[in-house]
Amino acid sequence: MKLGMTLPSMVPDLTRADLLAWMRGIDDGPWSSLACGERLAFPNPEMMVSLAGAAAVTERVRIAFTVVVLPLHRTLLMAKQIATLDVLSGGRVSVAVGVGGREEDYKAAEAPFEKRMVRMEKQVAQLRSAWAGEVVLEGVNPIGPKPVQPGGPEILAGSLMPKSIRRVSRWADGISGFSFAPDPNEIAAAFEVARAAWRESGRPAPRLVTSFWYALGPKGREQMDVYVKRYLNFFGPDAAVGVAAMCSAVTPDALRDSVRRIRDLGTDELILVPTTADPDELKRTADALG
Image (tube, rainbow, N blue to C red; front, side, top):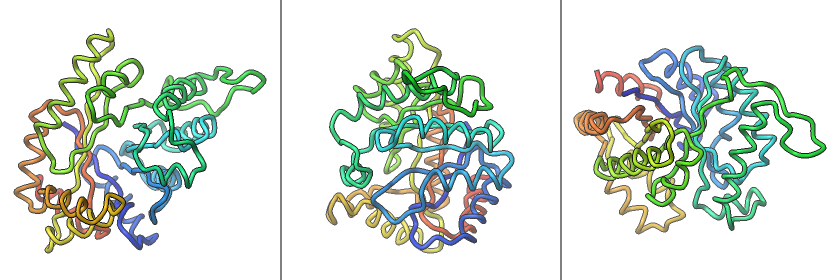
């Protein structure tokens, strides 16, 4: 199993020094990917700009979108941006796409919230056509540049529920999930649905990726609680407190146990999500996991 690391992009008050320390520290460490997620109606750095910076200052790690809320975006502009990032990174881009569940993000993007899954599936087909150099829209020239990776970057689906996993098996290269606790049983169930759905669709086995929040600082439990309550404030205070209590990866032993149990599920890549901007968390994590 590969181990990736997410930028602490949802932590408040990030500075240039913080971001560069994490980007370079991830590339210098044992991590397989440098990841970043997307929120719009939230005080976090923008995802595409962040990953472009990461692509420019790193040489080795994959540059992973986890995930792009694709219906928030204009499709051909996104195709051009991702292809440009693939060129800038030398062919290191991986893309997970999803529809999100926060209506306020759609309001901020001036995009319709309804029928977003149908729109996303059409967008994925257009991305791939654009990366292949095809004419996507009548009267519009092909969109470049050509990605370094033949056919363009892989596209995973940020799907969690069985129905949506079966649906994306028609077009995704795999799934990129998330588990709050984390709960190995929940992850295993999603993986089994994906394996079966890809077989039934007559497609190669899916790439299986998952993520979870963790905290290893001297006040790990407090750090996790503050982070989760802030990030999930749109759920309301009671729900956010309940989710925070579920998040158990707040000690080295708990982190090791979660990683081991997820590895044993046949996971292809686990992408850890830190809850602090302190770059020393990278060393703490590497030490904890050996």
